Amino acid sequence: MRRFTVILIAIITALSFSSCSNRRDNEVITINDGSAAVNTDVFSYYLKTAMTDNKDMTASEYLDIATNECIKYVAVNTKFKQLNMTLTPAQKAEISKETNTLWRQYGEYYSALGITKEIFYKIKTAEEYREAIRFRLFDTGGETPVSEDSIKAVFNSEYCGFRFVCDYLYDTDENGNAVKKSQNEIDEIYNNYLSAASEINNSGANLEEAYARFASDEAYNSLSLDTVLIGRDSGFPDGFFDTVQKAEYNKAVVIITDDYLYLLMREDILSADYDFYTQYRDRCLVKATENPLSDAVAEWAKEYNAVRQINTAEKCYKKVLKTDEKFRKDS
Image (cartoon, rainbow, N blue to C red; front, side, top):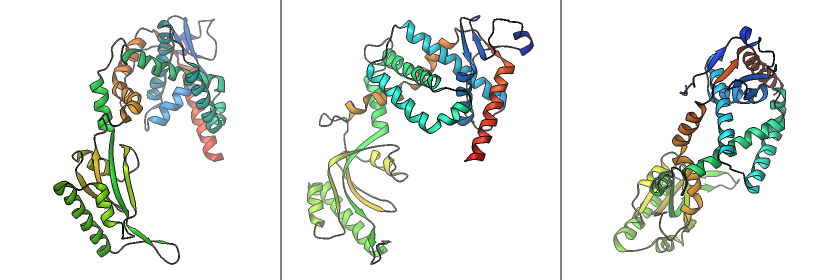
């Protein structure tokens, strides 16, 4: 169960809340004595997200998470305006693209919850506001910038680069089916790779020479002289990334997986020879600032006195359950 922090919320019962004649029926949360309100559509979106991301919680816990997220939604929108920030045309275009893509996939479901495409667009816009604020606060020249060393540390932790010779451990039979090589064949290739690694590390040979040594054998069929960059979640077999990352720079190592055998050399991806860091710096800044940004948003949210209309919130919860059941039956 994922841990979450519940912001202090003043909860008023439906009976006492109903005495406020100016409250609209579709308002779930009233903020700062009515200066802002969150309606059922936005609340239902965050409620459904809470129920998807957190399993085996009670209805009360889901409602609390959704309420907190709605307060943060208001806080982020307000902070964006307070900082006099605007989105670029490129950012707005990206929001529209994402909205259209997701709406084609999930629009029917969200519509059943009472969420329009316009509201969905506003929610996605708020997410972009949050990202824009992140860079305003924590990037170079920001109010509380993170150090470049911190961003580079994330880059080195999440990515690694290497050049390699690679061998596929399967042959193709007369019917076109992939058939794994015999253990003797695999052992022979493996031992040859070990010899090549030893030549590289001890005799000054390079990867190209090692490949040329095996070029006459049809088994050795893949070479990358350009450095390949992979991320921690690049889809390689378990343990592959960590093994490469632990290797010394410019030292040949041999790695065998279920399907492939690699002779590879890890490269220093922060070297001036590459522009990988420039390409991925923003992604790494995002990861480096997840906790600081979450803490900042939580602090902004504390400034809001929020009141939740219990009956309306519970109706939203029941509607999500009913809609989920309907779409399960129709799928």
